[in-house]
Image 1 (cartoon, rainbow, N blue to C red):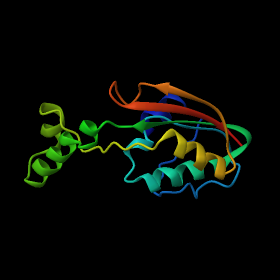
Image 2 (cartoon, one colour):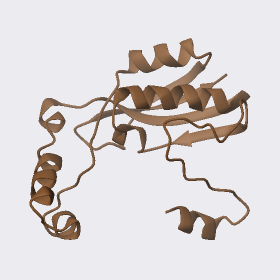
Image 3 (cartoon, rainbow, N blue to C red):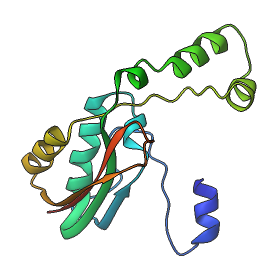
Length: 151
């Protein structure tokens, strides 16, 4: 995906970050920070909240932070049968490509954080909520929000 982004927009710099922080960037570095369909796949809520804090740290004053995150995942989705079955079959030696393409199983986790918790974290990190909009980016059965934030 990064290679394709570089091809489409050679005037931009793209960085792959393997950390749970954005230490590559100074405070107030960006005018715009955008994250869509990413945070819900992090390993834990603590990592997500750390990223939200980092997004605000690297955002310039009067910059714009836009991020999407589910605020509620129903029990039947929280059980994540497809992810658990993928993990089991993969541990038994089944090939990832077969599990994903043929059986439509995926190893990706899905988590959520309530809108109230996100608003609280944003405000304690010095952010100002400009708008919160419901969206369907996480699927029809999962309640999701897109947050618009400034500093």
